Length: 154
Image 1 (cartoon, rainbow, N blue to C red):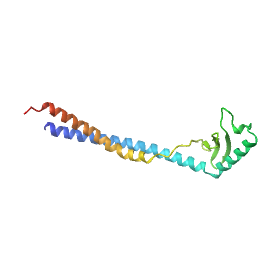
Image 2 (image 1 turned 45 degrees about the vertical axis):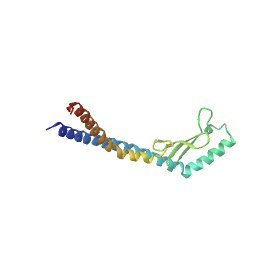
Image 3 (image 1 turned 90 degrees about the horizontal axis):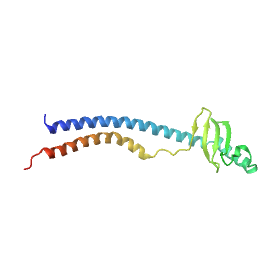
């Protein structure tokens, strides 16, 4: 076997291993993105629910009448509402009465989080491709440089 054939096979082997590693990285990233999307959807669904809308009106009215009420918060604590309805246990509000945190009946804490961008899904597809191209290209480049030193001048 010669240097050209050996490095070609080595480049393909390392490229295949890199593509498999990229596939595992892609799968792991996909699971994280799916969890982020599910959390975002769950928060948005609960934040738009009638239970939250009613609690917002209730706390807004109560705090307008009596700002010293303990549920209206103070300088160190944001307002909160204990609801215990519709799967929601407690709502923590921001100062402008936007939902900052939802504690559910099953003990989850849901924060407002942005939906994953479409670019992340493209990146997931690129992981195996880059996993192949990077080691394959590295071996090919090393062979190219090495043969430059090994060849005789004409």
